Length: 202
Image (cartoon, rainbow, N blue to C red):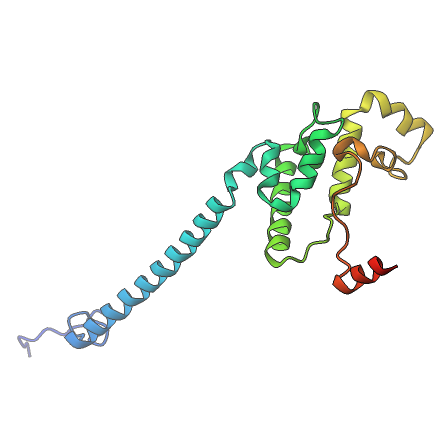
């Protein structure tokens, strides 16, 4: 017997529990308000992060660190003695900071800049750097490599024949003053007020 009702496959019928039309207006409003609030909070947090980052980058003269200008190194006042001593040293007319203290290949140079920038920022922010500033082992090796690269015509035979292990004695062991002059006036370890007063009484 035929009827006017058409059988509908349950799989093809819309699920009333998930249908937009079946969602009560109050629930829709709450969902929209919750979503808008989350988007607003995420946008606000991103805005704060971008704002603080932009201000810090501008305040620290971040773009200057992409250059080869030695004046970028004295953005941090703690480096002023090193800058002043370099101006009076024998290499002042032939080498700037990046010639000695950074690798010469593009990728290595900017990786070293980023790594040193992180360590310097951390040290100057938390004031936990060594006084006076000391070069670390990795950067000392970069310095040695640049000495040999720049003076290869003079030291090539010396490092390959006279001294089969060129790392046994580094160039600055004998030529300490060429980059920054005599190591005077560059500060010293902080011994504390009590130790300093004790030294004065002797």
